[in-house]
Amino acid sequence: MNKRFLDELTYNVLGAAIEVHKELGPGLLESVYHKILKYELFLRKLNYKSEMTLPVFFKGVSIEVDLRCDFFIEDSLVVDLKTVDSFSPIHGAQILTYMKLLKAPKGILINFNVTNIFKDGQKTFVNELFRNLPEE
Picture 1 (cartoon, one colour):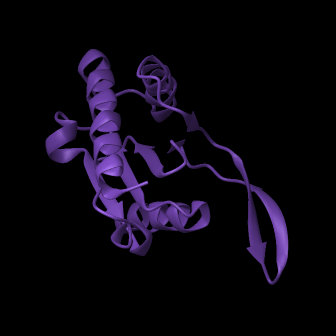
Picture 2: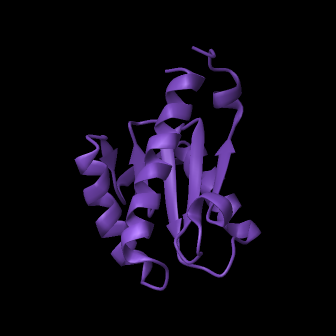
């Protein structure tokens, strides 16, 4: 894995979200966008997990928890969907936590409740894992 791979994957996933948004527009429930984006990711032949169970280590004990992360794509990119007026700081904190638990170097928040996803409806996050990856 390298930064270029993750950047291309991010571009592909955002393209999928834009395609879904172009067809459906804003105003639907998050669950609708989630199901349709699943199908678009399948069409693009991307491997993903959705709302999976994950072991969380707490005080030396592994506890299985249901992680409500919308997508974990190619075992490297966390994607969390929203249908909100605007992102709040808790949304950023949530995706950073998902990234930490999944040991993912990159994450994207996507808000479908906007007129233009590319301009106003996406925010990308990276962490130390990403910074330490080779460029290519």
